[in-house]
Image (cartoon, rainbow, N blue to C red; front, side):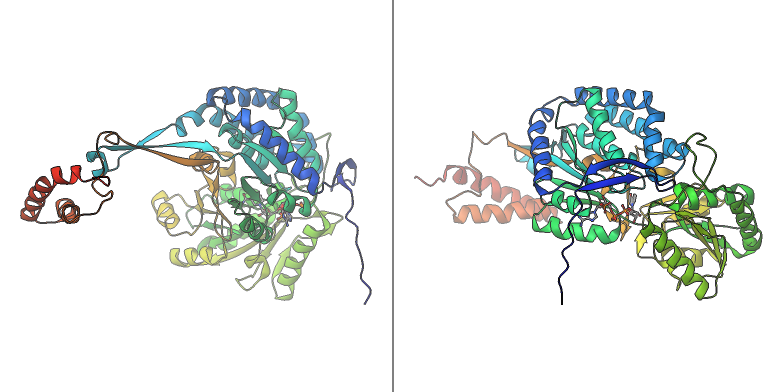
Length: 526
Ligand code: NDP
């Protein structure tokens, strides 16, 4: 058999998937270039890590203002690279970053402040402890294309506030946004090397994992996440994994149908359904199922599919990102049709897909089990609260779920039983944009957190500092040489601290008092 050698292309071409317009050419970087970027970031971290948190905060607020002033231009680059409306890019990719920058600039010092720890009996024995946090060094960030600005930029800001520097590998579909991020830091006047960007394909990403970075923040598919974890394990690099989802929306029979159907459609089709937290499964109470599905279908038909940069509000549904993505959507729709489902919409033209509503489906369908990542919404009825919970939990994923009802008590009761890292009540999609709360997944949706206090703590290591205040005054009773008195002392101490009987405690105390002065004089060079 002939061996075919396929050369790796040296250049990535960024193309607007909606129009085919070429937006730029970027290097498909190799191992040496990645190592060089990491070297620069390591060098920069030495100084950046010493800057007081307050001053880092001032830098981040400067960056925030630069982003705010250029918000439309930034959203324009993102919108063209993704093929979705500028309005969408503005509200989901850029706007949340302003709030996030503000939150971390003003709260990092408080969250990372040195903390005294109560150490129980050890405090009585003259010891005290505190914990403090210190940066990892260089954080490697590998990002997807679906939010090419808000996902990496949020992680970069948090990393920098914690005293790290970063190297970002953006998706091969959105290198222009990646380079834009680097330029924003440069234009704000940040020291060189604080935020490096390496453009390239998956191989460039794999070089980053083994390049000597101190931690990896990966956002992308569960499949790629597993590959990265394997490489990271070989180099013992810790990871945070933000992975895929198949998020359920549970609708009870007391909802306002008009509002809730609007929410379902937005949750399913926003960003052309290419959101990890998209509503990918809709469960509606049997009592209102017919009316609800009719309204969803009617409203879905009204959504405008297309792309316009001159009129950013002109279309609700942009293109999908790539042929590969389109194939996945097609496969799920075909599988549903073959198994007898009713598909309304779903027509394909170039990289545009008319939003599809799918009825008569169950959990044996691909569109219900696998992440679709497109404008496709399967709707299923349920009868009881327990059934809804069981259906929602019947998934390998656990990113976000939403519960819709006027009965908040019921919603909280349901939330408690959902195996998801985020549960929203009468809301969906939104929480990645709330920087104060943790973002992440359980099950196959991820490991670790970004955002919130928890996300900041992922960016630092913990140092425990322990002081023995008597350390220069006396020897510890468990040091060498061992002796009968020390042995008895250990037994007495055990009883003094842990015996439930007062009589035993008193006897133990007397035992300690008896042996203590002897023990304190016992030393090796007697
Ligand atoms: P991929 O997993 O295909 O890619 C993500 C990133 O990893 C890209 O930069 C990609 O580069 C890179 N990559 C690919 N192979 C490797 C490798 N072997 N080593 C290192 N890096 C590699 O995901 P998508 O970009 O297609 O994004 C969609 C997925 O992301 C969905 O599953 C979605 O649910 C998930 N996601 C999760 C989020 C969350 O917060 N939980 C948020 C957003 C998306 P390249 O592009 O060149 O292939």
